[in-house]
Length: 47
Image (cartoon, rainbow, N blue to C red; front, side):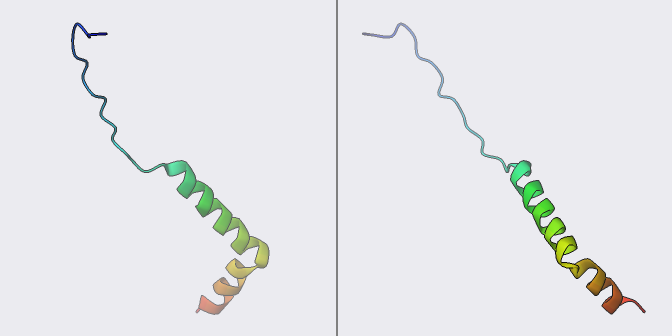
């Protein structure tokens, strides 16, 4: 089959997906709170 016209090639522009980084940040934050590291660091860094 011979095409009657040529079609442009699609261009794919990869870009970062924020959902994965947000999920990772949320996981780290919740882990820090669960183990109490946020309070421990706060006390250790208090003047």
